[in-house]
Image (tube, rainbow, N blue to C red; front, side, top):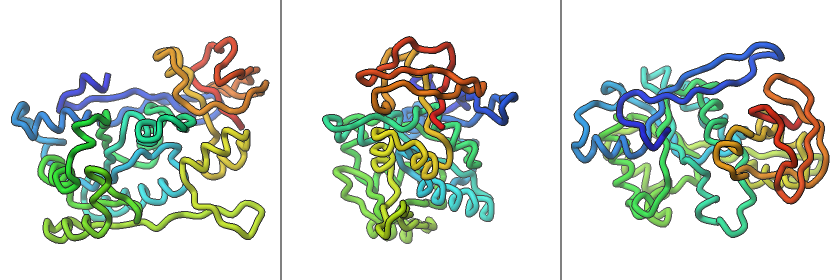
Length: 283
């Protein structure tokens, strides 16, 4: 569906549990990167979000862990103070799945799950990029100029080590220089660290949480993501692929989106006998 998005408001429906018994469908403004380019290239005469000014953060945001949440909540708070719409530029798949495909273990969350998480945090819109050679070769300043000129970006929030553009050449210092020149306010969040029973601190990252899932440490993953790890079975059934990281082989007692207990057997990164539900939650 995302490939067919135009600049007209495009939505992705999501269902997530409010309690053990009740569910709600929520709709969020979602745009493809191609729809943004269609305005840039003059193929569309419409204004992005009717010309509203925006605050933006860019990233894969896989797992929406504590570090992501701290950054995005700061974005939402600043946008509310400044009268801006808050949004993200994210990717249909996390970037490590493309840049480090040989040793990549799998996604923590599907795109559907990430979109639902963005909306829970109070974001107004998401722009989804299918990362390709054209996007990879874009200069960082060209990318920022598109966000500024087409998406009306007035505020940019990122992690302190964020880089963009061809081969990640545009770092935080370069972004700050560009922002001052264009009168765009910036905020750079410091890393968030986690201490698990030792004196050593571990930087919270999606890759660290993937390692926890691969080892079956679901309690640690839940603490860092602030919600249980979930497998999106709807994605598996639609694509026929296991794009998410899979726990170790074994038999598990998990819960469906209706909070019903499900017996699940995993072997060789596949599920034996897919259950008739959309999500499976590892408590």
